[in-house]
Image (cartoon, rainbow, N blue to C red; front, side):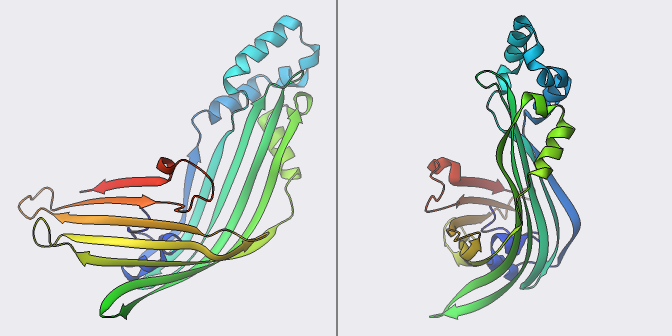
Length: 275
């Protein structure tokens, strides 16, 4: 729930308004890595069947049928790896940082006559800085923030490599590097707001945080970028009589409020709780 919770040096990239609540946080390179469930199986299949890929047309009809049967579970399914190294600092209304996002995907395509391997991917390098301040409007206090980002992207558009050229994973990676497009540069300006209010229900100390974030309010990367509007809310419920559970937080967040990507509403909702 990145619109209402700021607990690390990434805060200003998600909602710069949370810099007003961010205590000292320093991250010296940390790396997050994600791997699709079938990614290792697909890569192992490509390596184990390197000769079959390279000499598919020389296989007997029975061997070709067996190869296609073995690869059926992976046919036309993109799988891959994601890595996100980050370095940054955030404290008391100010944040600076940089990160890289790398997505690399492969798939097996059985094709009509000869199987192939598909590839796509991109790598973003982002440098940003944010600032947060409290402002008062008509007697009400709002926590506001703004972040500026500079972006560099290199990508590989989806390509198809024939079975004869696919060979092993190492050769596929080498082909992808050869197909990298020229570097594209861009920028983005994000704004955020968060406000707390007392609900006055269920006893003293019950608070509600609600937030609005507009990512890429002004942004460009090889052309105009549509803004991403995120809305979130979190209720903080104290349990003063329970030593083990002093507080219970429940939150909800709607990402891409205007549905730029055209995905199901429930895929854009995050719900979380913390005690």
